[in-house]
Image (cartoon, rainbow over all chains, first blue to last red; front, side, top):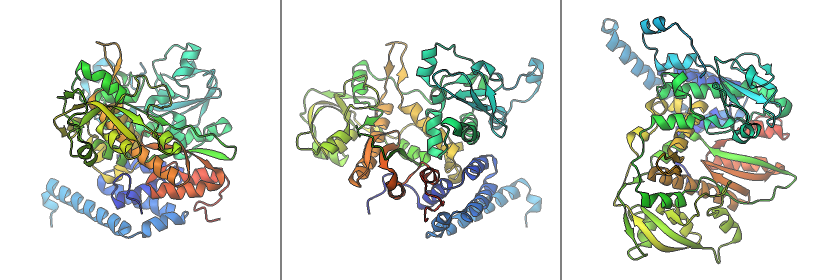
Length: 96
Length: 426
């Protein structure tokens, strides 16, 4: 197998492949996540991907590749943790 | 200039300055797809999430919107049309509207324009709004006056160090934007532009080092260390060279396309960067006549890198609009700059080296595709154009995936040519 021409992180590659397989209306929806807070972006991405995967088996195939779903889950967890940490800093009274 | 938000002056003073996002969200961007580009008259006008409407000509377009017409520079010039303050030509985003549409798999030709335009305008507005926000273009009426967004973003980037006069001709002679390879178009062929995902491509391109601005000139090839240049251990070098293609297979010589572009190269290709030398030398014999050497290379300045708003979040990086904005950013760095002093377009060291990296990597992709049996008709700007038999579109899709090309959207392309299911399995 030939070396990749441009170095791309495998998770970034998977996300990119999914985005460019989405039906047009969902790709446009993707662009809207720019307006969301980081913690909500991954949630919205997963909603879009889930909707698309029901119609396109190749998206399921991409998601099944090693490390893709765990990578997305990790990203969601990291963002949630960052968000909660920021919230606690802003409002220490609610800290557990 | 178009007026996105006309307000009373005193009210504007009293209100706090809007954030870049607020500015961006108020900016309306539309597209006009003319029925006949040769007349730039009747056509459909599109705004995101609104019903398209017919216009008789550019004069019918509301002036509270920035409009991008499907007419190009030649179309406007041919008709001698006066430039309208709120209308831009098709290449406003550094790509023609038809090229953006092709990447997305949207058809805007003939009767397809009515449906295709509705989809396309959404992406176009996203991209312009995103650029306004991430580059902090706080006053669109003032900031978006340029003919292209490439020029606007070019102004937002730090200017390159001026090059010495003796360097300018050589940089121009080393610069090649597009590489063309004549391939006859067969009846059963489809012309497909394969494009790397623009964002990772931009990040890779901008991660390449650029030479320092102090240069020393060697009058002959004495001291030129071929092996060190090939190994990348020789300092950055600008080489005056003659290429000999004797013994090189004809199809490879044609693919190298030295000085062969879509339009005539303004300066004769007599110079090349060490980046180009490395890959051309693997295929052909390069005779060095003289060279200039820079003492060292360093990373591209921080101000020339992609803005944080684009590159910080890997999900934002995956968005189609981010890709378009990152493409515009690279074009702004790689394009020639007009010099009031010389009255000519000039290339700086950064633009020449970035362009050389672009040509090198696009050649590598074109070469692999040629080796895999595809007919390549041109490459550059992170893309390769292939003429492929309709029956071999699925084969091209597989090659594109293996080589990390994400565009065009093959789903749409394959459906256009009769493959019915999204996964092409039947």
